[in-house]
Image (cartoon, rainbow, N blue to C red; front, side, top):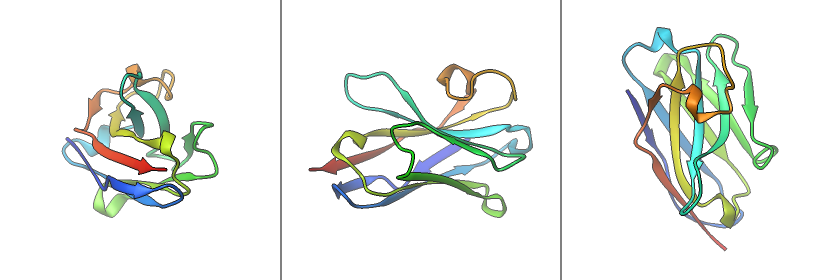
Amino acid sequence: QLQASGGGLVQAGSSLRLSCVVSGRTFSINSLGWFRQAPGKEREFVGTIIQTSGNTALADSVKGRFTISRDNAKNTVYLQMNSLKAEDTAIYYCAARGSPYGDLRSRTSYDSWGQGTQVTVSS
């Protein structure tokens, strides 16, 4: 199970940190990703972290502003979001995938999803 939290209403230029707590079969997870979905738009990739290596990948739209990190002791992955923009407004979802294969930027590669947390950035 995945439980995302940390969303809220902030002004442009502010920061937020989202958390995703993972429970259950954590040993079978290859990577944990963050996706977001704005109203009327498709769910899009934000970033991901490979559990074994700690390597991360981020969407071009958030590079330089967002970072992904993890705390294995807490089974938690974080999405630190800085310099937020109005266009970052969306519901943010964390997701887990068990397979090391496939496109880690594609939502179809992820098996389990959290419930989402709303991020609203006012301009």
